[in-house]
Image 1 (tube, rainbow, N blue to C red):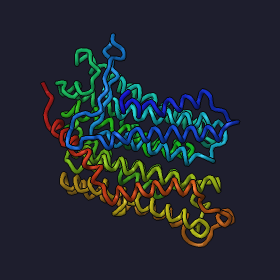
Image 2: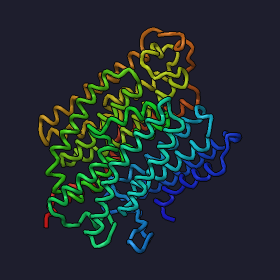
Image 3: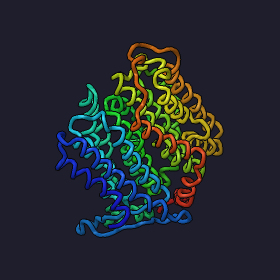
Image 4: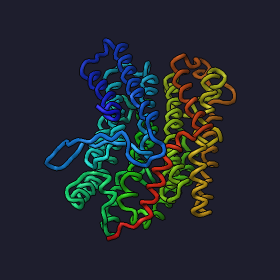
Length: 491
């Protein structure tokens, strides 16, 4: 079994074992098995980082064999600079979520942990798949464990949120399946994604394919105006579900633009770049203003995620090195920062059982260690230099200014709005005198919570101070992608 198969199937196997044999009567053992499975899943990804050739744009660690011979469907895996970092990021966030959920999940622990481990493997499969139908299977299969996580362990309106999440994302994906079948027929019976990249298509087929993929990926990102499902889902999802949804699942849609939309339909991508840029800027500016008026901490961070992901799609569709590289860096950074923000909200919710900003005040007086971590993550969410949140946004703004000064100026307003809503929330929740008796009786974070937030803090600072390892991996693949998109595929 190759490294990529190990990265995919290690957490899935552990997850299935927990689902099959775990019981609440042995919840402690279930948690340890889940932790061991997630750590092994992370360790398997280490050779991918150390063995990756940063000078090559070719697919690496390739695995390929026939899966369903009649339809030429292959089990075809590989990584390049566009996808490499998302495999260890997914495994890393899974370890964090297992640790963060150690005490606050007390019922059906085996199902909760098992669902997360299976979800982790499926998401890694999305980033590794080089067969169109295999990608679609992994992409759609991620809905099942997340639907269960929201629907079983979510808040009071969890059923509504779970259905909304499932229907929004499933309906968009059906058009993508049509596009995949069309490309299969056009390529003479091949589901190979790299073959599709070379397929000559007229302008009308490219346009239809582009918008068919857009239907799935724009909902998943989510882009404006398809973002309305995200705040409801975040509010109802358990803390671990929100962390994984923001840190990884939103990236599946953005990654789809890089792997499918831009290289398969480059002429359509250039033709409709104005639309993608406009929708991205609306997400950055308008949704940032919407975040300012939120009273629920989870809703505020959810809208913040929409605004930050607007930077990602903006970077992709300005078609220059800084923009595309900055968009990918922003995806990775957002994985660390948004995951940390939701986990911080989870720490408060576990103690006070409220996400309302008005329910707090002066938390720094009773939880100084926790408040220090929350301040670091808030600053990273604002895009403070030397944090992960700064690097990608700065690269995208520079690329946008090269593309068009006014686009760059509008994109830069996100730094202002981000600082406004994040620091306003921090001020009301953490600073000032103690707001009420609930806050007065709070206990500061323990060793486990300190470990979780400390690991994320190191990741946020390390990426902000020294982002070179991340950009070195992606540079050759970004250059190759831009060359490909610049060439017309019209017959």
